[in-house]
Image 1 (cartoon, rainbow, N blue to C red):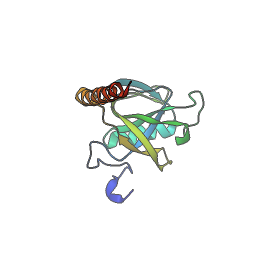
Image 2 (cartoon, rainbow, N blue to C red; image 1 turned 45 degrees about the horizontal axis):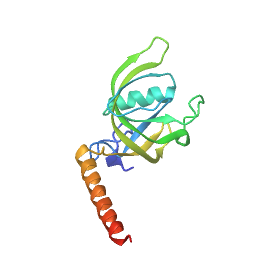
Image 3 (spheres, one colour; image 1 turned 45 degrees about the vertical axis):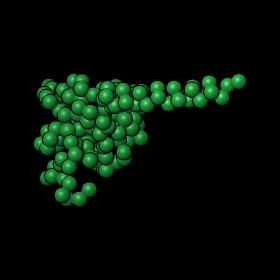
Image 4 (cartoon, rainbow, N blue to C red; image 1 turned 30 degrees about the vertical axis):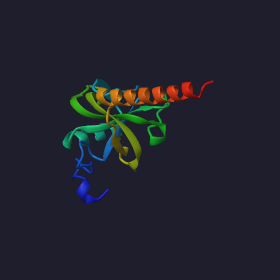
Length: 159
């Protein structure tokens, strides 16, 4: 990552698309779906620093479910490669020293590799476009046309 692509907090800045090419990663015990609010309690020092740095920047983070939900393994190998891009919308400091967050998940994203692992994980992300109803209808119409043509050929070739 070049100096142009990061700010003083060493977090990526917005790329030419809708989201940065790399984001800090929060590993969660559950799957997160787009357009949902996710309450999260953060107690690990690295995650607290991640949230504080993200809030100084754009508040964007990558969210992915852990493969081993019970373990403390927070490396990229324990993350599913599909997740979401989310924006931190609320941060409250809890009395026990952690953070209570609310994150709005925005869009599905694919995690394409590690940018760095210290002091917290930063990963390359590729937001995925959702297929619209119009796109689905066009594909369905094309499949129906193909089946009709194949059936008419099959009928014509039958004795």
